[in-house]
View (cartoon, rainbow, N blue to C red):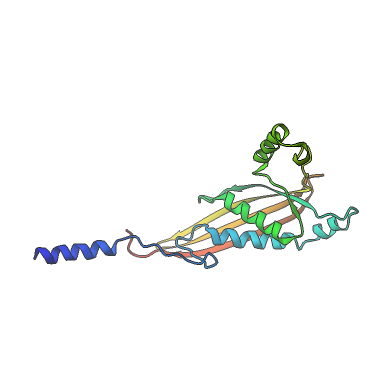
Length: 195
């Protein structure tokens, strides 16, 4: 009897063990309905694709000088109840902008580190290889945004609605040249059993 009970306990505990499985990052893995990496990637790609297809880009490219517009990704504010890793989202936005090949991108988050390196070069590096201070590329536009969420629960089901709003603003005159919005709606059904 003791052996059977011990075996039953062992089997029950083995069934409760944590299991980890590697999955392809391109495959969506939405476990809770909360904002996730797939949402971040899809929203950033769609928003940037939309922004770069609007008239502001052709107007800028039609100016004398023949250079691409320079963009800096500014602050994106999480106004939702969810924890959203905004750094991951802004990196996805930067990646989509840079990979488009249609704009130049200047660093925002890395500026302090880069400027510290230049200060160090002023003291410790040969003059012919030194990168001087005061030669940074200025941005023509700043991209800002907000992420909002609404949850509509009913029993075991809930609808999670995320709305991402972004605006591209001219730094020369505060003129908004593009405003975009992307919505995500998720239906989440909870199981009867909760552990």
